[in-house]
Amino acid sequence: MYPAQFEYHKAGTVKEAVDLLAKYKDDAKLLAGGHSLLPAMKLRLAQPKHLIDLGKVSGLAGIKEEGGTLVIGAMTTHYAIESSALLKSKCPLLPEVAGHIANATALPPQADWESQALARLRSLVTIRRIEGAPQSEPEAAVRAAEVALGRGDLGDAVAQLDRLAGANAEAAGPWLRMARQRLAVEAALTHLQELLVIGLGHAPEAPGGAPAEAPAKPEKLP
Image (cartoon, rainbow, N blue to C red; front, side):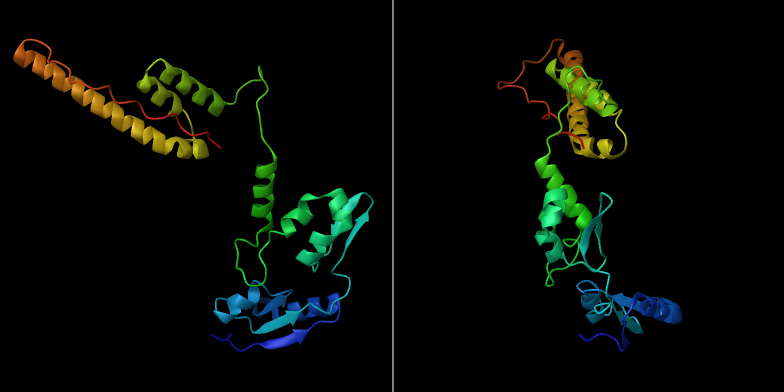
């Protein structure tokens, strides 16, 4: 598929680019690499009437340090970030993440700096709670649930995890559903046994085999 018809403008300065944006307003899009915009235009997901190319505008690319602050120009390429000796010495995470950002043949969300940086940080950092430090509410709830499971009290474990909210509650949801199903089955079996005792005059003999295990402990919450 081909993009819809548009008018192409090649800005030579920042002022010229700003003037073109002011003139065409919402009908204009800036072209600064085009790895996301051009595929969207070919699929006609984006249909700008005017395309303003920033490729020849000087002063928008480069990596430097000013007053203890790293400055990366808006037109700096991923390769320049990946190969920058300055960034490797001052902020090595950026060059490493740049190497994992999608190339021109890939589409977002792989070309997402935030998600790539967070993923890399998760792989590098292990967070441990210092012994004796106060627990957060989710940590306390999970710990109380583990203690309850240790003594065989599934109902109390469910009650403890019911205190969770937000993302923590969502993470514990699958385990809680399974645990509640187990509790419902146990309650039904207990009621059935009571009915049999009334009908037979004594408790029925238990079938052979080991009792079913309680659901496994919930996975670590975020």
